Image (cartoon, rainbow, N blue to C red; front, side, top):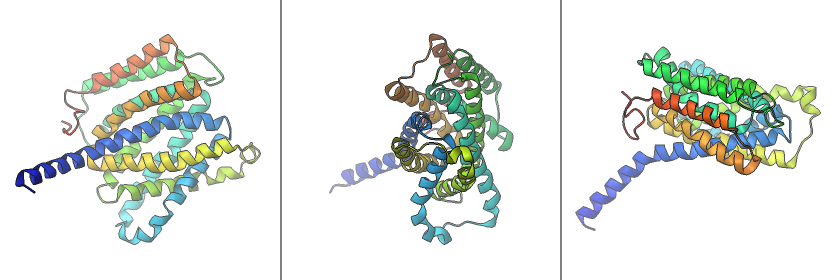
Length: 312
């Protein structure tokens, strides 16, 4: 083998390693986009709280093989409070708000609200990490928030979305929790393996939602084979796969850069919602979606989201 071939092989290997975080984030966004449709569908078959608990329980079982590696994970007492806060933000509060959101709004609208996450992460980074917040970022956030409100106001009340405005507000609160989670995950992933943190999330979520099994409304709710198949998909492919991929990506690149990929979730969700749930947006809602993306683009300084680049 020639020296030239060796050099080319090394260059290809380096490029592949550099691309892996972005490929992982892209696949995670596709899986999360499908999760909105899967949750909406499963809520029609089973009690929402049972779905969320089942999802967390299934994900927890997937991480049982990691128990033997716990002593080698480098967990210290100083990690306890950040881990509790991280799990409190997501999945506990996040899924509480998101399950409420999907009762009142459509999967497509809820996914559109997630496009505001990068702005929220930027604001949180400014408040908690001392990063600079520009007027452009604040202006973009206000415009995107206005678009999200318009999205709810412009929606017709249907069986799929009986109260779009309330549902979109709950989804916005879920994004506030997700922003806190992203900041904490970035901090913890500097010392702990991202897949280990993913396992802690699953176990924490299962313990948090376990008491719902005692609620009479949950115990008396009907079960469905289709519903449980969706729960298995959410617990394995989404909770383990998507979160594992996202945590891997965020451990390799800046948090704000990783959060920018969240803008792809509405695109995937709109496609899945159209194909699976036959959801349709009104013309006014399409304009509202455009306003959300306008706010996001306005908040992004030149080169800020460039792949492989650095945030200023």
